[in-house]
Image: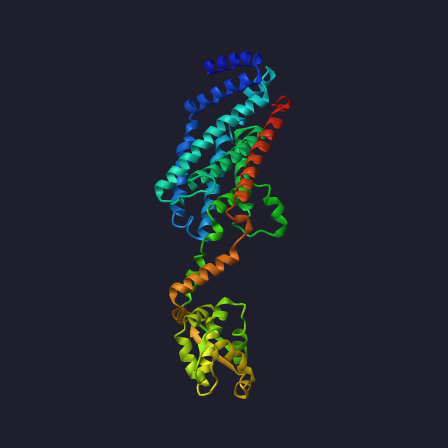
Amino acid sequence: MAEMNLRDRARQIIVRHRGRGAQIGIYLGKMLRMFVYQNDWKVLPMAALIAGLVGMVVRRRLFLTMEGTLMGSFAMVMVCIWNGCFNSIQVVCRERDVIKREHRSGMHITSYIAAHMIYQALLCLAQTGVTLYITLLVGVKYPSEGLFTPWLIVDFGISMFLITFASDMMSLWVSCLARSTTTAMTIMPFVLIFQLVFSGGMLTLPPWTEPVTRFTISNAALKVLTTQGDYNNKPVLTIWNQVEKMKDKEVSATVTLGQVLELLQKEDNPTIAELRNTRIDRILSLGDVRDLLSASESYQAFRQEHTLEAIGLEQLMTQNADIQVSREATLGELVDSLPALSEVQAHLDDSYTFKSTIGNLIDLIGEEKATDILQNKVAESNRLPVYDNTWENILGYWLDLSLFIFVFAALAIITLEFIDKDKR
């Protein structure tokens, strides 16, 4: 202890006569010694442990499905924020008395914070490397190609470093505000909860909170990781899992002949347009048309896209199988001429109700096709422009995170400039 006091006094004398650049070097050397001799290195194995636990949870979903990418990105954001916050939450308040004495002896606060920024940046870089390596070991499969570099893991690593470093600087500012380590550790859980709640991606928030989310590191962090995970181009798995549980549930639908004919007249739909071009070159009944359509690939595509209407159409043609309807024409021409037939006009408003189970409907379409339709249709409705995997989006989020770093560093400098007014 006496040796440490002598070193502090010697450092005060040296600092008094050194410029800002030299002081940065002195304090950086001090922090590196504390890393080795005061067990600050323990943050690295702690980061490895957290990364391993989180990696084992998200490895089967991250980068694979839309919801898995969002949840996995959120988990990785929380890892980065946790690492960054606990790097620096006590570093200033634990030596507040020493800082006060050295400041009165000529220490520049800017040099002190700059040294912390360099040291904490190196620490955050090491934690990012450890986190990526451990998540790889536990089975997280990072896509191979990145947008800015040939490897997505490098792009992802840049984002994780910026998130960790921004959180570190935020925590450094909290440490400058706190008068003791106890106070700092009491504040820290509230900071973490605030970041979690107002991330803006996982929890549904009322509209008035949207401006608040823009001032949280977690919001920009979640956006950049989710964007790099190519969220908008991933399928949705949850909806299919729900459908699987409901296969035995019975559903019913009612259609009229008029509704079916109206649907078949929509030439702006590519599937229907192709179906309308089907040629009928002999006298046929509605029953013959039904059999002809069953063998048509165009009709099968229509059936997959409009299952309920197709089933209704088939039932209508079965019930009126003897009606003679055709001459040499296309199916589109036939459909357009049907409403003029008195036999058809009499049945335009007739409704036909059929019942089936969800499982049977899936079997009619084909499970693979049904899965693809459900997952992609739901994915389309969930796509958000803020998650588009573009240069502009990612660079914008990187800029936001960098801004957080320098704003919190500036706040730390301003706060410590008033340390001489501390009444302790």
